[in-house]
Image (cartoon, rainbow, N blue to C red; front, side, top):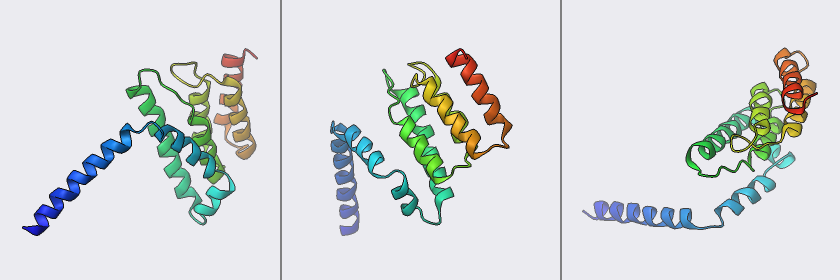
Length: 151
């Protein structure tokens, strides 16, 4: 009986604390600061030996963030897409889908994407440098230059 009462109290406490955390306005700032703190060389040290698994985790987080903004926000903000994609390619520079879809997330005009086609072309150019044999990246870089930059 004591175990059941303890379990009920624990669940009630979790529900209360989670609703309090979600209602706090500083969560967005916390996420931005966390992304700034855990990027680049620090991120490689964090996942030392498991960089590919870390890149997969960050990629899943990137796709969930983008999809969550598109599906559930009235005015989507994609401000964290670029640092998340940067973290993915820092951990695994040969993650070609991160270059291709990350560029799409960046290039599409608001409210569909971030509206930064120059950053998208730069990302694809970095992908071409990292994976010169991947002709999809060459094609996408040319397509984005033509479609979004008019070049």
